[in-house]
Amino acid sequence: MHVHDRLAGSAGGIAAAFATGDRGGISQEDEDAMRASGLTHLLSISGLHPTFPK
Image 1 (tube, rainbow, N blue to C red):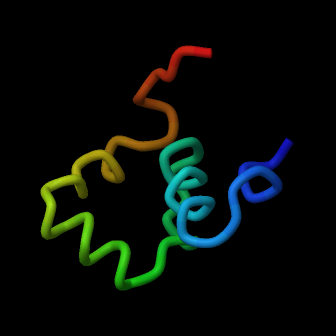
Image 2: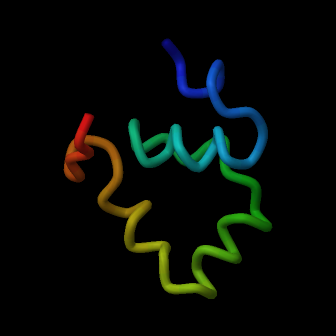
């Protein structure tokens, strides 16, 4: 099932980016907030690199 079917809006865009590496669903405001908080590095390794437990 697609991430956006489970999480709408901003949360869905961020979750999809973590899972696939596609950052197109993240708003500029959210990307700026992630950069300010130091979490942007998570987006740079997203997609195939991180492993999430089931």
